Image (cartoon, rainbow over all chains, first blue to last red; front, side, top):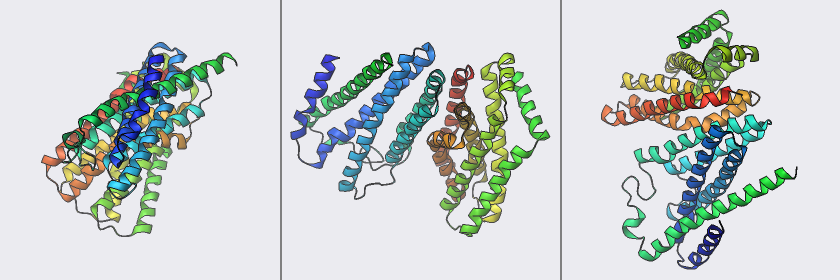
Length: 205
Length: 216
């Protein structure tokens, strides 16, 4: 974990001052989506683990991963909107990926509201676990399958070439992959801190 | 066997007390009429399709939410002691899907009378209507169980259900619009396949996940 923390923080620093164009957003926008999907995946796994074991620590992890994933989702959305303004001319365009992203966030907001409307901890854990699994599967369909069927303004869809084919040169590649890892580790790190904080709060109640 | 038994029980209860189904039907008619009063004439097929599906979507929340409100705590305990959870949820899903198909049929009749439309490809159209509506019923069966555990409010069911139903809404509206325009099946089959897949995935997920809610 110590290694993860230091790696997450160290890669954060150098990639800031490499490029000064909007393409630099690649390191923030694309990577936050990767981190979000990874965190929601982790939450999905922990929800399954909870339903299988009944261990309330797994439920806590599932909840925290959703909350951290939301932070990255919102970051991805905001950076994406700014980028869209400068490249496609508007903050919001009718694009399947944008819709998928917005709906994912709506589903996970609903998850948080569901959690808060239930008071009994065991039924809350079970019910929200069930919803989490259902929501994740539908999100996968919405974000990964449906956009493949229609054209999208995003690179790599509907005849648009992907970035890697022409402008992701080796320097950027060297920053991009560590950046993905960096964001994911940052997400894990935040989750870890939140998890410990919650456990601490629980033990002092 | 027990799936059939619960299904007949549901249908008999509804036949004896038709007000819940009639309530959903009346909700549907009123909202269709509100649309007619406010819009009066629709020329574009895309407007027709989207209005139709929005109305059907909100009707489905009302119709399906009722199916769990009617079950008392004592009756749930009784079910718990005599049948397996998967049988119970399968029969509930089939029943809700049936109700939704009936409601959607009524919706098509009334909506196409109020707003005239020429459907070029009726087979694709009815395919989307029947399986889309049945899909709403299937997805909302599990979600209404979740909402009923959390104090049974319709708002919660709507916020939980809307994001989950959206992929289905997207696919059904596409098929319906293409059917009205008479788009060839070589393009349609892809969407038809996805719609069927979505229904099957939701059905399977509900059967797998329901036992965990059941034990509550």
